[in-house]
Length: 464
Ligand SMILES: Nc1nc2c(ncn2[C@@H]2O[C@H](COP(=O)(O)OP(=O)(O)OP(=O)(O)O)[C@@H](O)[C@H]2O)c(=O)[nH]1
Ligand SMILES: [Mg+2]
Image (cartoon, rainbow, N blue to C red; front, side):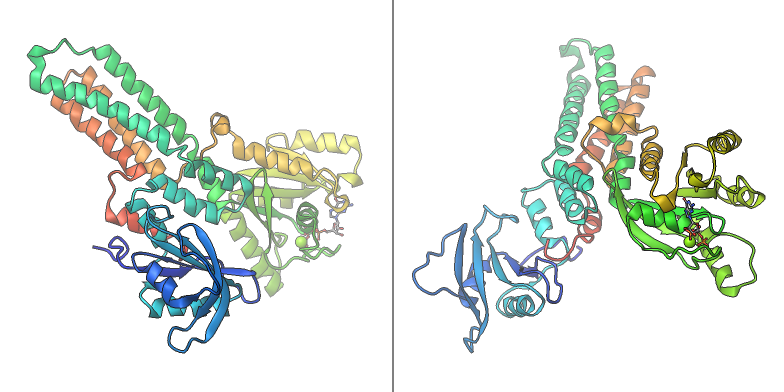
């Protein structure tokens, strides 16, 4: 049995971020049967204070042998089962930074607890039935959320917005299974099975699964974000575009072609999606060793990006060099950015527009003037949302594990449909129905293997 699955004993960890000189409060969390004993051993409360559950006590954390005061702190007591893990939990709210919390943790470890594994508090919450697996995963997503929208979806998961429909679908499958199994055992005593009804029920369940599956791409996007590379000839205004977009002077801008030599990175959030923007060196043939490496890095960035902003200079029109770069990047998701439109008149823009009509979407900007930068964000959302309109009204975003299980459930249900149409014996129906039920159970964790739990909880931070 893996170590994390066999979660026994009293565990302790620092629950807050540990950053020197930062965070005015640091929390050491202890969970397990010795939690109260540890609190009594380490925490001194002056005056009359009652050690009741769900109360906050004021006092000092002291070394039990020397009585040396380690910190002035608050103690929060949450006795089982009214706690995160459903075990006795105590939290020492110490001073922040790194020193006080680490000393307090050390004392907890020396007095009856061991250091928690990553995610072990949440694993206990799951094993003790306080959370299902989708909720546990949502907690990890909430902690790791890089945008407010990602946080909102994680919260929806935590509130059971995925678990609820999954349980419902599973219950429907179990009902159908019961009906069929009854026919296996007592066919003569029961009315004929309504095949049409069963087929349409299974189709409805499969359709609902498809709806949930639509949210998978969005989930992936919100969790990992989007990598966007600005690519083009030297001097077309790539760095100016990055600066205008991120409202900063992140990248050096000069009128010399070949200014940017290395990939420059900036983080943004567009429509709730975290975006990593990479400004790259202008792509051209060069003998300069440093620039050559820069150009290679640009090409690599373009290949690795989820989206390329292929930038050209309106005042130069579409040049053979642009054509060459376009050939390299055209197989990637791409937006054409026609920059420096302030230098040309309307008819030149119209000409360029018709010349490049095959590259869509396209936007026209004047980065140095901060002009029409908003059209960039609209175009990005257009690319990202293409074909995902159906997911728009569902405030859910399933992860890869949930997606894989849902696909398995759907495949099993399709198999049942085929089996019914082919009029195979009832035993065959039940095999695939059980497959679907098993896959749905894996999502919420009613049936789950140790290795899956290991994989899920090891991604958590320590202290959660
Ligand atoms: N008129 C005008 N000038 C611009 C615009 N955008 C950028 N420029 C100017 O064009 C020159 C090059 O801009 P950069 O942003 O450094 O161009 P780049 O594509 O990053 O160039 P490299 O790093 O050399 O590849 C600078 O002098 C900018 O001020 C624009 O929209 N209009
Ligand atoms: Mg540049």
